[in-house]
Picture 1: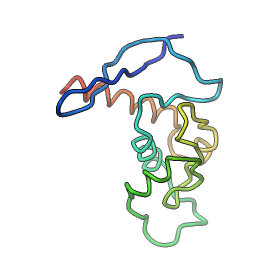
Picture 2: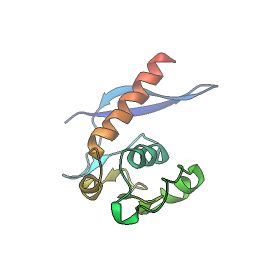
Picture 3: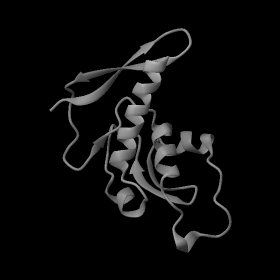
Picture 4: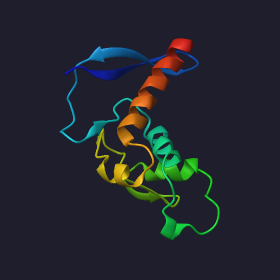
Length: 125
């Protein structure tokens, strides 16, 4: 199977992925690849598209914290800023099952949209 894979190239001002269709090692069934994506970008996308569970809804939603995100993506994330993530973003293959159970949108569609936005942004540059 051919999967979307990003080969990174650098220039003086930006790092931009060139979109190539290359075969690479696939994730086991049920897992999705975040290879080539910044884990903090993945975390932001997952965090933004889920909700705070009703039993923890005390006060306004906290603002997204980039520094906390940098620390969180180094291992398994159960909850991030009161929202359920339930994934280990330190790996190239992630299991979306628990996130999908608790979220508004499925992780697969969010990761796919991240890949597409990166490709579109690169073409615009």
